[in-house]
Length: 484
Ligand code: 2HG
Ligand code: ZN
Image 1 (cartoon, rainbow, N blue to C red):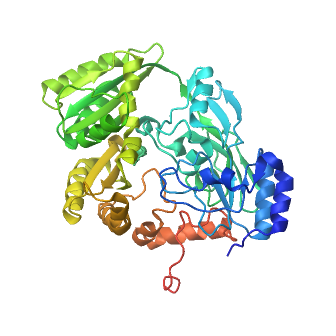
Image 2: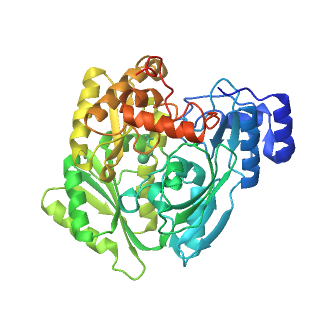
Image 3: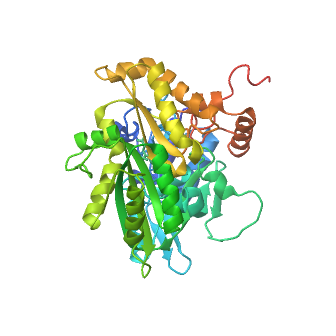
């Protein structure tokens, strides 16, 4: 059990961090107490904003001594309220945003060392400055921070070729719940000293310690990219197209994102300055990006040939390839605005699920039909990373319904239904956003006992006082479960 911070602890933290690093001002705290979709609001006794790893370590030691919980937070762009404090108000919110230095970038090592508060777009710029790229990208790149991306094992739109954050993190520096600093930053390509603590911290959602910096893998800068928008009839055709493109363009394809017609319609309705990329109507749309390093053949040539052949075979209905960077950005904007358009449109029960890639076309069609039959009037909007077997399977309220009331009444049942379906297909209820608060109950319900037991054992071993981001990721033992 954790405790509320007393006046002595708060005074010591205030002294340690100074006025820039400590506040109890409700106005300064307010923006960070609600998740970005406005679905969970917590409370915190103070906002701590350390400027160095040493300060984070000192905070953790004090918190451990007083048994006070810490909730680490980066850009506050969690999709599962993973960085929102619990409502009881006794936790301390620990923002890493002041730790925003890029400690080094090395073209020889192909490595950048970035502190937890570095915003993803700033890391992109720093890598570009030495002729390299950090390939992970996602719509929230202007606010998501390295600490959050590491702690959630973020995915994004380039996973097809570069993997998730796990495959891009070469080293980690973190403050463990004991207050000890784990200095694992040295970017060794090979290291067999037993358990991989670095990978344990990736995706741990701040429950095993506070990531303060990471060594990240860089790649050669993009020499040329080709971005295409394709209209087609079914997700199954989309998958056939992806496999064909891989066969003909090798490693060039790095993004393959699918959107249903109603998804594109939402973007066109709500996001100013967007326009339809193709003249006709299509049930499904795919955004494709292929890249090549400087000096290699222009990927647009191979993509044009491959799409021409696919059109000739009737696999796709229409396609356009961006003629320049402005057009390429406009196509990407359609995809990257999907979440925002959906948020403006209203409340949705959001699911971030994966099944094997080969099952995805069937799941998209059967899963949608099953939800819409079981919850009449609801509208499934599933979009995202087809090539990774991961879609955002979001269920919107019946048209004309009070969507907040609908969500309150039906949201949990809808989510359980979707998560059960995915679990029955051998899939995961969290492909990239994490468990956070929102998926905790369904995770506990659907996870195999062996997984839950191992998760709890690791948590208990590293954080015996339970002070690290309580109420996230690790389901509490339910009454009756303990005796089994
Ligand atoms: C994306 O792929 C993000 O755009 C957000 O992961 C998905 O809003 C969503 O459901
Ligand atoms: Zn996504």
